[in-house]
Amino acid sequence: MVCVEDDEPVRDALRGLLRASGIKVAAFASAEEFLVSDELQSAACLVTDIQLGGISGLDLLDRLAGMTVTIPSILITAHSDVAAGDRARNSGASHVFLKPVSPVELLQAVRTALSNEH
Image (tube, rainbow, N blue to C red; front, side):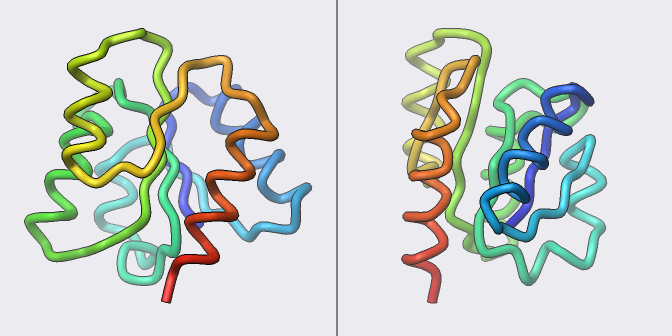
């Protein structure tokens, strides 16, 4: 399980929520950090913000697809942007959540993604 979020308090909160639920998580401050990490090939689920400094969450999904890396992905955003939500789903995101994210809904989406991982 990987979390990519450039806002440190949000990243820490997501990491804490996932760990408290028994989910092993690696957290990264940027898409660039994740793309050069050892987690790239083994990630079973990705939670990322749509708007990141540098490579955006949407561009990250496109890069992963271009690398033929398939990771069930969940995107979060502070902005209600229908076009970005549509692009996220077209890029393979299973869920798009508005911040603040409901912990129950996020955990349910992560567990579903992890249970579907083969």
